Image (cartoon, rainbow, N blue to C red; front, side, top):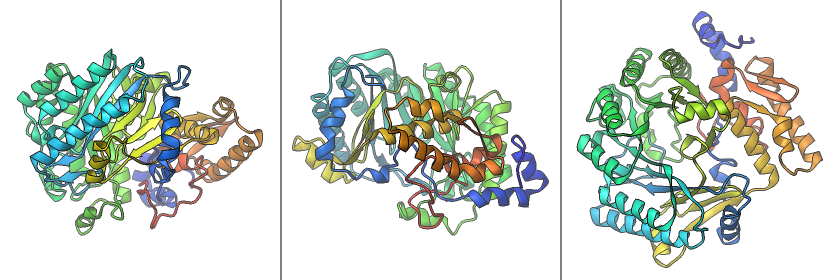
Length: 477
């Protein structure tokens, strides 16, 4: 059965079993492609690759630009959300947190010694974990240290991920006074039964008041996170959640499918005994949410983001400068990412460097005067080309193979082989109307949108036939 390009939702309503059978035929594990190659390939010796990668990031002619984005990983959380796939630490005492934040400062000093101080900082991002769970003085001190070390652009984005159950207006005022100008709140759902099932507390302020307060204080790019596929969610309950989020009027919404990876995060097994929406229900819920957000004036950005037309993300999508990194979809403001903290991953023009994951080991190494890299990957021209194609598909929904592959200095035989093998893997999606290809221009159709990651994987030489069971990645649907 071929699904018409714009009628997937109608097909699911008219002949649901047949339409779902088509989608489920392609369901399976696939990377999220927040990096290419994915992080499980970062197994090269950092002793050999770290200095060359950092030196190349300093080059005057670096193709991706010389701007610096700084990511600070704050892994601490007051409680464990059972859906979480992040690197987090629960119930660490205050003295330990203070020592870790001091180590972050020390690591930044070590990194700064290797960077060209003339490079401007265009973005500072605090993620976690729960950055707003630590004393705000730690965040203030790190931002002040960055400003004392580098020239921070006047229009730099200084962003924070927040747990809204820990924040009221006074805390928002403090964060704004420190210099934060963009903020993201992990709402996830507004249904008390859903939140209780995943061990998460509700926002202290209703979403509408939360957004209004943040906007009044001068925050822009205000984002609310939602997760689809959690226990006790139903089509009706999720419809109500989406309606409340639309009423709140954030600048952006991130709607993520729940990623069940208990082989990596064992605490997720606690959710397996609870009633949860199946793949078909999740597809319907996501499609209905997509319709609701676009009807409310939001533009769909990539696989799982929505933004108001005047927001930087929507503008970047329209002008072709949208990018993807470990923070999700980002604008061209995001430079090369130098990441600090346990488990943090630096995303540089020519490769990746990952820090020690263990907090104690991380701190010992930094205190000894080492940059705490534990792995990484230095990219070849072929990797860069595949990354260009995959990013174009996931950011713009289309990729011009001829144009993208001609931008790199590639072996003609490799180019021909890559194009042929990728289109061969894409062929079933073309036959079922989930993608189109004409003269090297590949497009993900509206019907293929739920399978964007699987379609992108057709252009990943490393992911030719990823099995659904036992894979290292979450399922697509």
